Length: 469
Ligand code: AMP
Ligand code: ZN
Image 1 (tube, rainbow, N blue to C red):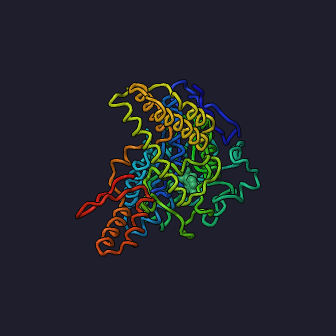
Image 2 (cartoon, rainbow, N blue to C red):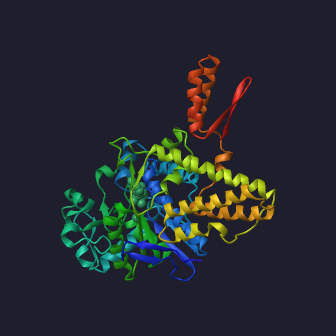
Image 3 (tube, rainbow, N blue to C red):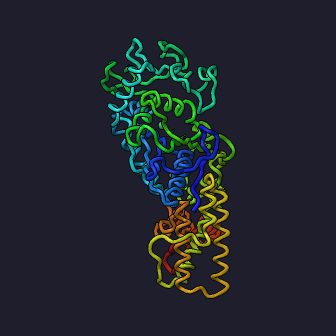
């Protein structure tokens, strides 16, 4: 089977995804900042990372996946203070919500999910190493800064030249209260306590404070994956300054190369514009569900475009995804019927679905892989309808089909077993009421809406039932 290759932001070339230690592919993904619900753009990135992991594992390689929880930063502190809650109580609530969303989207849980707050000592330790080696300095107020000029390779990942580094990105915007930096490019490793931080401060050799934004990922990735590991990922917005700073911190502290391969996914757009709170087009999984769509349809949409290109989310694309999923369910049901109770245990070869794996192994080409999935499905459907497929053969095909679906992380079972979403139930009830009131035009209109979302209303004498179409 082909070894998967992936475009590496650092070398700007395709690299094979083979584990450096010959055994386990170790990778780190920057996780959510838990100060509100994750939006569907965040989930695009997490879903693409999930497919990457599935492809590596399908190629027969074990993985170790670490994804952090950012539970101390400006946003979490500001919001918890505003709500009068302790930082812990506040972030625990949003973390739970994040986990529920991940489960609904069938994201594989990372093997380790370290929290920044629980790793303050490791972060302090790395800052001490950086000071000892001359890469960091303590300012008068007890903040610690990274001396960017001390790290020759700074800017390699983002391809920025010195002049741009000082003016680009959030680093520059911080300059107001960071006047005692030696250079505008220097960034905070440790932030001395300020009144607006409230009770959120931890003791350190430089006084009470909290780690800077980039420190947690450097310290925790090295702690769980070793000084050098296979891959590091996140959305493109993290290339600079976050990942550039992580490289500078980790490599200067350990003296070893940091992540070997850098994996960045392009952003999600909404109806042609950037997703943002102010434009009112920032959606969450809850919004998707409220409109009657299944989380699996969102997964489908999020991986329907190539990860290196930005993806335009539309409500119509969710509708199309929902019908595509119904076709998957249909084939699975047909194969189950033909298999007549027979099943194949364990993994098999890919059979007609091998081209699907190949497309994913080639720089995670999810749109091509989906195209190939449907081509293979078409062939299997043709066989099923055109001749008698024996139970054993059907069982094998079904298992190969399931394997292919697992590569994308599509779970068919959840859909069938779940009750209709709230919005569908509401529409169905409204339709029933309209019918009782003999407003048949309205009732038909509502029935069409329900059908469009993939549900069928079955009427009985004194009520109705909702079933998946
Ligand atoms: P955050 O919760 O802001 O720390 O972000 C979590 C992850 O989501 C990071 O990898 C970001 O790069 C990624 N991300 C943020 N916005 C988007 C977007 N619009 N599309 C895709 N990924 C995003
Ligand atoms: Zn990070």
